Image 1 (cartoon, rainbow, N blue to C red):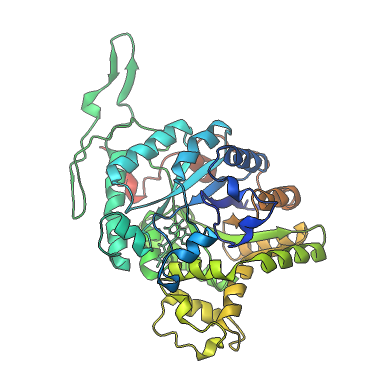
Image 2: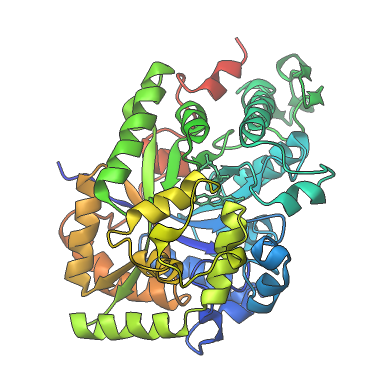
Length: 451
Ligand SMILES: Cc1cc2nc3c(=O)[nH]c(=O)nc-3n(C[C@H](O)[C@H](O)[C@H](O)COP(=O)(O)O)c2cc1C
C-alpha cells in the first residue's frame, strides 16, 4: 500500500522567517502578520489543500550575534519583531475543522503549570488539533529575557526540558482521570474529587502541586514535535517526540536516512515502536508551469535575497558572529575548529571547497529550494519519502503564494499518485495521524496515568 505523505506549512508570527529579504515583495503578505485575517485565510487555504497542519516557529529573544548586536536583525526584520504564535490558534481553529495547528514554545518561556493549562485550553478550543514544538532555545538573549544570566549549556537545557516534560505529562495525563468529569445536572455534581489528583512534583527546577486546572481535553497531551538533532537532541526526540522536524544541512537523502534510523533505534530501546516517531523534512518549493519558469522565479528570489539578513539569522542560530569572518575567503582556508557542528556540517556539505563563505550562505538558503514543475517536485518528494521521510514542512518564499502554488500544482499530482490525502480522517490531530487521539501506552507521558 502506498504510504501517504504528511504535509505541513511552516511559518512564523513575524515579518521575515527563513528566506530573508523577500518580505519587501508585493506578492507576499508578510507585512500583515500583526493582523488576524491573513492567518485565517492561510488556514483556510491549507485546509482546502488537505494539508495536515500549519507549523508555527517561535523565538523568545533577538538574533544579536552578528556584529555583536541586534541591529541587522531589526533592520531586516529577521524574526524580530515576533508575536506570540499561540494567540493565532483560536481564530484559525474557528475558521477550519480539520487543519492541525502546531506552535513552538520554549521550556524557558513559560512555567510548565501555566503552559500546560494554556495547551489544554487550546486543545479544548480546537477540538484536539494542537501540537507543540518543544524547543530548548539557542539564543543567549532568550535566556537573559527569563532571568538567566546566560544560556545554560546545551545538555543542561535538554535536562531542564526532560523535567519540564515530566511536569506537563503529570498534569495532562495524571491529574484528572478519564471519568472524573460527571456533568451530572440531576445531582449537581460537576466532577468527582476522588478522581482529580494533585501531582506533587518536586524536582530540580520545578515544584508543582496540582491538580491541573483544565479538565481532560481531547488529546490530553498535544501532539509532540521536536527539532534538535545533536546527539542529546536525538535522545530527547527518541524519548518524547512523535514528530521530528529535520532540515539536514547537507540536504541529502542519506543524511536524513541516518538521522531517522538513529532516532528510531533509540526509540525502540526506550520501549517505543519505530513507527511512533515520524520525520518531516523542511523544503521550500518553487513551482513553475515549466522548468524554465520555475528557475526564473527562483533566480528572482535569489536576486532579492538578503545576504545580510541571512548572516544575522545564521550567526544567531549557530552562536558565531559571521561578521568576524572574511566572507570572500575560500571555505577551505577557514579554521572551523572553533565553530560548532552545524557550521562544520555546512562546510563539509559544499562539494567544491574553493567556494567562499558568501557562496555558502547563498547555497544554504537556495539549497532549501525545491524548484521545478509540479511533476518534478512530486518526484523529488517521493525520493525523500523513499529515504524514510514521512512528511514535509514547507518553507515559504512568499506567503501565501508559495503554499497556493504548491496546492494548485503539486497536491493534485500527489493525490493522483495516492501519496496525499484527498480528505481528512476524523477526530483529533493525533488520531488523524496515528489512529488514536491519546498517547500510546508505551510513550513515557502515558506512564503518569492514574491506576
Ligand atoms: C528545523 C528546525 C526548526 C527549529 N525551530 C525552532 C524554533 O521555532 N524555535 C526555537 O527556539 N528553536 C528552533 N529550533 C532549534 C532546536 O529546537 C534546537 O534548539 C536546536 O536545533 C539545537 O538543538 P540540537 O543541538 O539538538 O540540534 C529548530 C531547529 C530545527 C533544526
